[in-house]
Length: 132
Image (cartoon, rainbow, N blue to C red; front, top):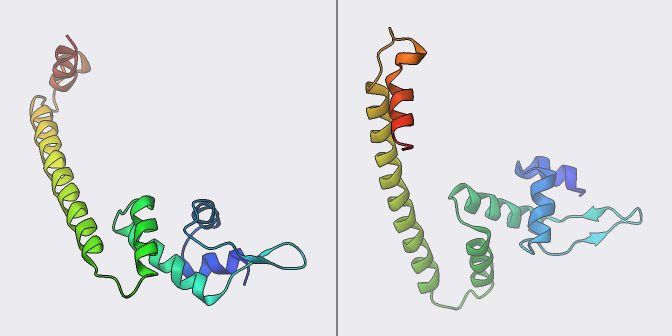
């Protein structure tokens, strides 16, 4: 199948597929007589795997490592578990940072009522005061 069909089957853009090929997350494909890349069902499955990993916000380096580990089915999965544990910690930290950001934004929003002019806007005054 050609790249457009692969994109439709997997829900990935053609641009993403080319990027994953460039990053060597997808194997080099054979070419047709017209020099089109030709993909097989194994590539469909690999691309679905990559897409699922990206939906979990795994980095390309992490995905590359998982692909390499997946090709060694007899190994212990400690490295996989450690990677996911680290990712969970990173997500927890991001959640904490986002909650702090939300608090700051709510506080900023509470500094201004809707019946003020821009000149009297508490939000703009607070933002300007924090620059000094």
